[in-house]
Length: 227
Image (cartoon, rainbow, N blue to C red; front, side, top):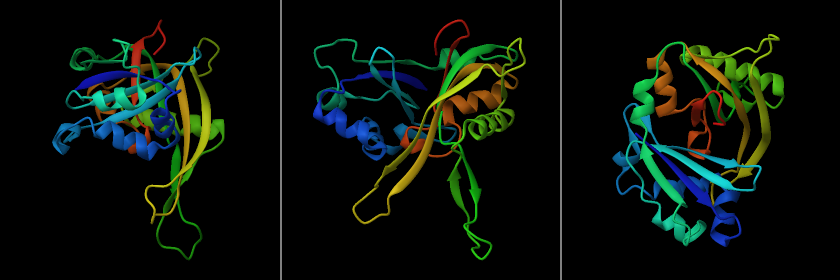
């Protein structure tokens, strides 16, 4: 597995197109892999996330089974004259170091949602996004239990967790398809590893739905640092 950090230049026309459409960004990321098996394998898939930082930097993070070639994105949406615009490093050192009881600062952009029916007469279900902070926090804590980690509580008993950038995205996947409506939220907090094997799966496969659209990638850093 590999972790890639890519600096986006939001002033460029190509970047604005990618930032406006999760579908376009997904296609651009997958174009960095020559073969399908390079970006999707059993137990691992390509995940990506956009971070809009306070210093106005826009950073694309990609976790993938093989190292991508993002030369096309540098030309379209990056900083060609900046040698640091794109860097990839192995992810195995972090994955192999995971152990029970470790605490990590984390960041996650996710699609907190539930399955439900429009009405009692409809047999099929669809996903509905959670839009309130309370619902979104509950969504994450429930999934944490299933995936080998827990959100740490502070000395006052409150979860060491904040949610922000709560948004509703609407975009199309093609000229003939219906628009997609996607609820997202970003979480920053501190977690504790309960089951390393399950937690390793979260880092390599993601968590929640809409992973093709920039959701589900959870990244970690030492708890005293910013993820």
